[in-house]
Every structure is written in C-alpha cells, then in structure tokens.
Length: 241
Image 1 (tube, helix red, strand yellow):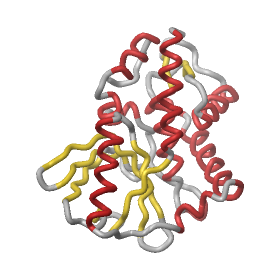
Image 2 (cartoon, rainbow, N blue to C red; image 1 turned 180 degrees about the horizontal axis):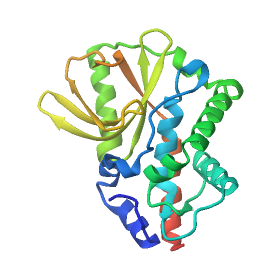
Image 3 (cartoon, rainbow, N blue to C red; image 1 turned 90 degrees about the vertical axis):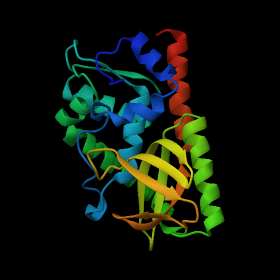
Image 4 (tube, one colour; image 1 turned 90 degrees about the horizontal axis):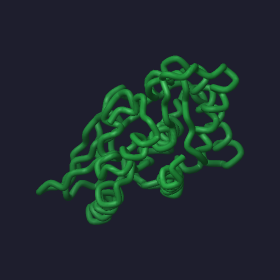
C-alpha cells in the first residue's frame, strides 16, 4: 500500500480498503524521513510532525514521472499539506519519505512556524498544561475502549496527546488496535522513532506505563481535523478528479 506512483484510481482505491488506516503508516515510504527535532527551546515539534504526517497520508498524491516543482512551489505544497483543505499532487517524488528527505529543511521550517502560530497566536501551548497523567482504572479503561472504537470500528488514524507528569505533553498517531483477553494492543507512530512501535494496555492500568515517557494518559485530539481529512479525500475521489 505504499503511496508510490499512484494514479488517481489507485489513490482512491487504496482508501476504500477497510485496513487503510491500519496499514498505510506501517510502511516507511508513507512517513516523514526525519524524526522530531528543533522547535521552541529545542523541545521538538512532535504535535505538528504527527499532524503533518496524517494530513499528507490522506491528501498527498505522488507522481514521480513528472518534473519536480521549484523551491517556491515546493514551499507552497508544504504549506498546503499543513493547511489540509484539498488533495494535492506532488510531482517528481515517489512517496512522502523521498519528498521529506529531499525537502527536510523546508518542512522543518514549516513545522516550527506552525508551532509558533499555535503557541503564540492560538495559545495552544496551554494544552500541555492540563490533564492528569494517571486516572482511576475504570476511567482509563473507558478511555481506551473509546479509542478502540475510534481506531478499529471507525477506521481512523487517532491523534493522541499524551499527558506526562508536570506540564509536558507528547503525541502519538495510533493506527491500529487489537482487543486481547487482558487488554488492548496498540500500533503507534511516534515522531521520536523511525519505526512503528507497539504498546500493550492491560485492564487495571491507570495510565500507559511507557519506558520513554513514564506514566502518561491519552487524550484523543484533532478529531474534526481527521474528519476533514477523510471527507476531502472522499469528495475528491467521488468527483473522479
């Protein structure tokens, strides 16, 4: 399912597959080539790295056989992925990994601009200041079951804010989940890693007990943004453009 030289038909057929959201990000060609870095005070741009990746998955179509765009046009394409209001064709590249490898500096600058805009203009930095890093076990179970419904039954790529102890928050993209006898298995794209990771939540846990971030509680976010992603792709394909 790698987004290589997809024609419009293949681009649209892929998203009709019931396992599209579960498998598309498992392939490295469909992810950014670089990990979370830079950002304000060197704290990274994980939230925006994740959102940019998800936007590109739904709305970037690649045509490696055409001539690549100029730097000015490439900047416009990157801004369009951030804005996320239409399907765009990226000429001269086979997939997101290749595009981001060649244009890493331009994409990173846009992610940091997005971070500054959300932080200083929209005051989104306060999102990392609220929320518990542990919950009563039943509330945690309900939260994970809601996440399972969103990811597995509704076929969404979930954007999770992870509340870490103190005022820090990280983000994950959850692409798939499996219900087990003692809990749930999660398939995750973490912008701090170059490869997908897995996590096992067990009934009775009061948090996700992660080796990298300690105890964290997941908060499902940017739901409307993902609804827009799916709606725009669906409308594009229905129009046969």
